[in-house]
Image (cartoon, rainbow over all chains, first blue to last red; front, side, top):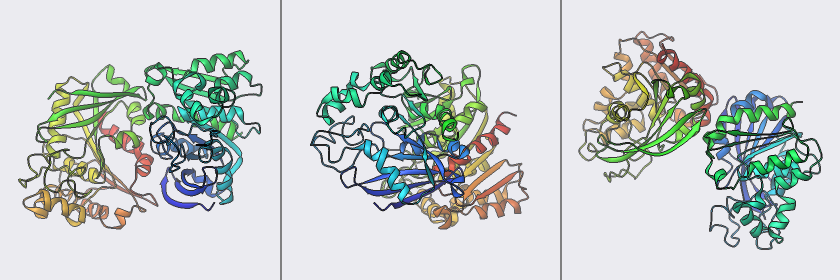
Length: 288
Length: 288
């Protein structure tokens, strides 16, 4: 599990570093991630925010287009950008479509035998990456983690946050999340293909709306979406379902805030517009 | 010359719009550009800043990765992102290398007959795009233009600014510009292949260091480069030559400021770090 440094770019006085390693969670395949270290990481361990990207993305999209680094530098927070799936598994149908398989790991652990050797993005993000990075001696304070993401990655951030029994994350946020995947085509396809129990299994383990409806611990969640988002219009995101379930479970808008933005779409032009809001939101908890 | 709208993305309360049209300057080939309109463009004509991208880039790189839109929105300035060359000309050797031909138009008008029908990025940027956009009725105040760019596009911005007899631009700035192209491999290759007179012709018309040394009008120029930039180390950029020529011609650091940044490289991670500085710099002149 040795980290190989691929590149480093100075940005906002900190450094964005790309690493590669052989991932046990992903069946021994090589995987890459980007890690942004703010300038104060040269003096002390810093808190970390994990960014989960959406369908078709890699570890680069959020780093290049998200406009997260400026505020992360100012706030003194590291950002980890994992990839979105294993690559090179050769599993059945993994490259046939853009919403399943390569680039579309859905941040779950597959239980179908055709995929379960490689498609374990949940373990990769929540256990393996922290272990590997900590073992390498990089200056991260792993007692202070939060998580956010976009679209499929917003689904990942919300479900990982809500399902964590160990309260590994202090806060979660999402841009345009797939918020009720057991009720939308993307989620149904993923659950039915990755999971032996299909949508029923996914509903219990990996559906943010289902999870928040049964959640009882305090929550710190921010969600933004745009009304001009075609995937929102097509019913892939369903943020209203999540909001209704959260209110039904007793969470007020201090604990679960869902914001609708007139005319914004699903792109990084939307994400970058509200990027600073999300970093500042997490800073409230990461720096407390 | 009808503009075809390809896409529109709301960003920072303004809108980034991608257009396509058949370019007379580029031999009748279709070309694309992005135009960012800040929110106040819905009320009045706004000043415009033209961003020229570097080798291998398209109209998208600056828009997606430059981190220019946030400050442009706040300052009320439009940004025009042209492509970097004609595409689809079928001219000799135009796709053989990444530093000549497609993606590498060098913001000049070719004089060699094999290229002169299509490779006229100078006319495209300085005359055609303003005409086409103005004719379409978009809310731009063309009496207030400035220009900036990166690498090959920094070369373009500086030379276009300095060579403009009509004082079309109020200010120029550049990230990591090819500042003395008649003395570096990229510039020599471009001049010798696009221009009948080769490097000698290029030196007189398209070399920022040569142009500033003979310039007498007031100048408003900002240049940033990183000392960790491999192209700087390889002698492709030569910003010191430009600085020396500017000081020799009597320009002080209020008129021509060249800043060196320890450890930064040639990437958009560098550009985005100093993006706001450049927008604010141009706002001083565009909003005066």
